[in-house]
Amino acid sequence: MTKSRLTELCSNPLALYRPALTALLARIEAEPLTLREPYKVDMGFDVHGKSGGPANAGAVAVLPIDGVLSRRDRFFGTATESVSAALQELKGDSRIGGVLLDIDSPGGDVLGIEELANEIRAFAKVKPIGAHTGGMMASAAYWLGSQADFVTASAGAMVGSIGIYSVHEDLSAMAAEKGVKMTFISAGEHKVDGNPFEPLSDSAREQMQANVDHYYGLFTNAVAKGRGVTLSKVLSDFGQGKVFNSTEAKKNGLIDAISNEDKAVHAVATQMVKAAHMAGEMRRVDGQWTIVRDDEPVDHEDEPVKDDDTSASADLDRRRRNLSLQRQKAGLRG
Image 1 (cartoon, rainbow, N blue to C red):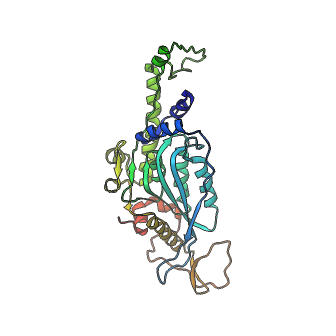
Image 2 (image 1 turned 180 degrees about the horizontal axis):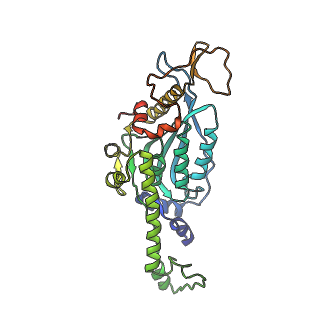
Image 3 (image 1 turned 90 degrees about the horizontal axis):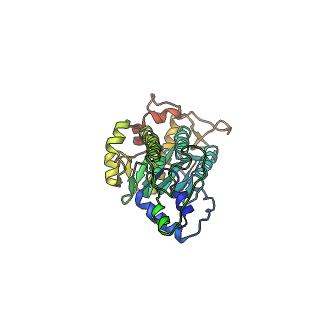
C-alpha cells in the first residue's frame, strides 16, 4: 500500500468497527481506488392496510447505506453526501410516504456523519423513517441509524461499536533502515504534528485525543437524542465501543426489535398510515381510504377520519417527543 493511501484513510478520526479497518486496508492495496456509480433509491411498494383500513398511504423508499462511510465515497462504500441528496429528494416527493434506511456498514470517517444524522432526525419530523440492518450497523452507521424513528436488526446482525479512534502511523524506523530521512520545512508551530516520519510527540498525541473526545461527545449525545434516552444510559448500557449481537442490542436498548427487512418496511408503512390518520388526512374517496393532500382536490369527499386517541397531536413534529409510543404504534414489540 502506498503511504499516501494509508495516510488518507487515517487522516481523520474514525467511527469505524476496528476489525473492519484491517480488511479495508487489504482491499485498498489489492484494488484501485475508483468512485462507485451513485446508488439508486429502491422504491418499495404502495402500502395497504388491514381489511377495512386505509388503502394507500404512498410508497416506502428503501435507501441502502452499505460499506465504509465517507463524505464522498473514497473507500468502496457509501457517500454521506449521496444519502443527503436522496433524502432531500424523497422529502419533496409526494409519492413517497416514508423511508427505510437499509444499513450494512461498519462505519467510517466521521466527516459528514453529524450533518447527515441531523438530516435524518429532521426528516423524521416530516415523514416516517426507520432503520434496519441485516448484517452490521456499527459505529458511524449506528450513529446514523439511531436517529430514525425506530431501529431493527435481523437475528444474526451485529449492532453498536459506539466509539471513536485515530491512528498514527510511525514510519521513522522503516525509513531509517532504508537510509531515508525526511526533512519538513514548515511555518506554524504545529503544522507537521503527527506526520508519519517521526514518533508521535506529546503535544500531537494530546491534540489527537482532544479530537477523538470531541467526536465521541457528538456521537454519544446524538445517540441519546435519537434513542430518547439519557446520555448516562448511553455511556453505561450502550457498550463503550462493544459490538452486540441483536439479542444483546435489544436488551440494552440499541434497537427496538429483532425482525427482518420486510417487517421493517411494514413498520414504516404502519407509521405512515397512523401519521396520516392522526393528521386528519385520511379520507374515503370513491369508496376507498386514501391520503388527501392540500394540493390534490377531491370531488367525492366524505367525513375525515378521526383518531380514537383525541389527545394525539396532528403535528408530526411531536412524534419525536414520545419515541416509545411511536414504536408501539409501529408494532415494534420485539
